[in-house]
Amino acid sequence: MCGIVGAIADRDVVPVLIEGLKRLEYRGYDSAGIAIVAEEAVRRVRRTGRVAEMEAAAGAEDFHASLGIGHTRWATHGGVTEGNAHPHISHGELALVHNGIIENHEQQRERLLALGYTFESQTDTEVIAHLIHHYQSQGHDLLVALQHAVKELDGAYAIAVISKRDPQRMVCARMGCPLLVGLGEGENFVASDVSAIVSATRRVIFLEEGDTAELTREQVRVFDASGAEIPRDVHVSDVSLASLELGPYRHFMQKEIHEQPRAIADTIEAIIDRNSFVSAMFGENAEDIFRDIEAVQILACGTSYYAGLTARYWIEAIAGLPCAVDIASEYRYRQVVANPKQLIVTISQSGETLDTMEALKYAKSLGQQRTLSICNVPESAIPRASELVFYTRAGAEIGVASTKAFTTQLVALFVLTCTLAKLHGRLDAEQEAEMLEALRHLPGSVQHALNLEPQIVAWSERFAPKQHALFLGRGVHYPIALEGALKLKEISYIHAEAYPAGELKHGPLALVDAAMPVVVIAPNDKLLEKVKSNIQEVRARGGEMFVFTDQDSHFSESEGVHVIRTPRHVGVLSPIVHAIPVQLLAYHAALARGTDVDKPRNLAKSVTVE
Ligand code: G6P
Image 1: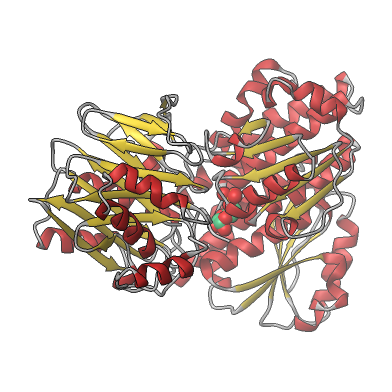
Image 2: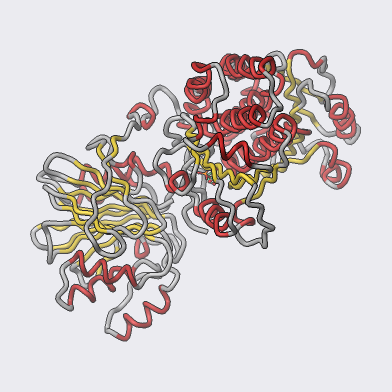
């Protein structure tokens, strides 16, 4: 969703702001803007559409300055218009960018109107600019004015502010939305995501909830929620520039699909090196916590939720622990029956999805203190709020449609399952060796599945003209059918639904005709014969079947039944291998339809609003 970048330097920061905004594009946005303080004036350029259009406008208006802020906006309050795009300006003097939502903006607006302020936009953000300006006008300096203003805000925010009254500094604040400060040599930066500033510096301070900060060229000072100056740790980011570049690929999604063997190998590296499932990989106290728990509750959104649904089959079958999986936005508003002996597992690629964070806070407020975060972004909010952490090592995921994050989440959840099983006496040494062996072969099996791409391209051409598609799976492959349908609808805009194949006759069969392609995930597991019967039910109604199965399933092609074979059955890890062909099918169907694969309409990479 929205992105922030800001810089104060001895050089022209406009190129830094533009590059930063381009690196934030992947998060999803619909307008962009920058504001600078130059020659004692605040200047601004905003455009709906792509950063490149705003860049061209800034070039035409000869924008250069050593102090500036930039923003990509994903509309929430107020439509996608130039007037609603950030930065917002108060009295021609102060410019502000904001991520998050101000819940009491209507009350603040009334108050500010009474104070004589006028509003140009429909956003919740504009009240913050006027509020800070109001305190500045009472004689406070920019930092103190910001600190006063944020005390009056309810909701979530990451804010960066510049003012022509104070052209030697930039101030910022964070509550509920990520914000970091980048430390350079004689120059400093703010950003909502380290990727925005990584080509300028890797040394960063992650601001804590309630922090405010003041940046000059030479110095950064951070203050906690009470206003006291506080030292915060400096981290060195290991985000690789290569993971942020497209390289020889046409789309980030394509690149990330093909990176999966490497991403999985990196994620399991420590386990393979130790040749053992060691609880310490989840954190210092993990062994005591894992031994003591009696159940698992998984909370997540989107693709991460489907990873959780897959893991339920493993955790119950292998570790013998009851496992519930909830969509975070549902869990957080449900009257949950708490179980302090339950391990709360959040799954989030970004580590900043608001609903997942709030579900975690709610779970903890009910006395469920044993929390584990499975996350791909170090130091993000959700792992920081969790007692235990397992970082997937997928590298930066830029495509909005999650691919390598999903398969590495599945790997992490499988490692969790085996670790729990071992501690609960359900995995003896021989079984542990088998599971480790399966993991060791996984990157190779995933590579074999990727090699099916040419066959899948041929299928995708038949999919591209369709309006609807149905995905079927059973057991542990049902969540993969769900993920396949989600991928297809997200990026190709073909309406797709997934069902457990046994449920077909209870409704969706009514939709089946020759115009409805039916994708089936049908590897050689104990439910294969049942799935074959379900396929007959579809064929009998004239439906066209596209079956992903493995080498040893003895599935044959026949009229209206197309078959692609993944490698030999990889046993318990089969859902991970079968995620690959459904990703490729969605990608190539979207290519054939000519959609914007990496930035599908209306969607965002990190959903930091409700
Ligand atoms: C958005 C993204 C999805 C992602 C979901 C959850 O909808 O577009 O790809 O699965 O958020 O995100 P998270 O970062 O919490 O895994």
